[in-house]
Length: 160
Image: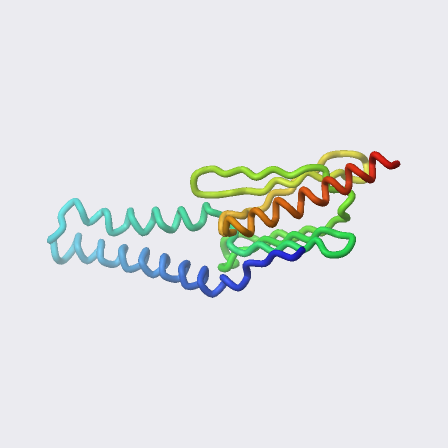
């Protein structure tokens, strides 16, 4: 199964550009208000606070683009930002039989996917992906696909 929300990249790029422009314009209007107009008084601080809060929510919601591919013998995960200067992209590929479990964590403004895999030395490795920008249907499909892989792994272990 393939899951890919990169078609929304243009929308996320527009949204991030809009938030950054609002932040810069708010700062400019704040400076003008403080040194030239004196209309809003103490409320002029909101010209900076509101756009800054929007920018922080957008940044802390995580990487916008999530790609998943379970076709073949390997699982491929790719997670990246639309604006590359926030943080580097995450890309992982591993065989299906190494997948042990997964967990979705939903905390207010962001959702995370934690994947637990086994390594060569039987250590556990936890991989983290941001899935905040996936729709409900996409999350449901992802859960179904990962559950299917785990079930196949458990059957394989039973038969061995």
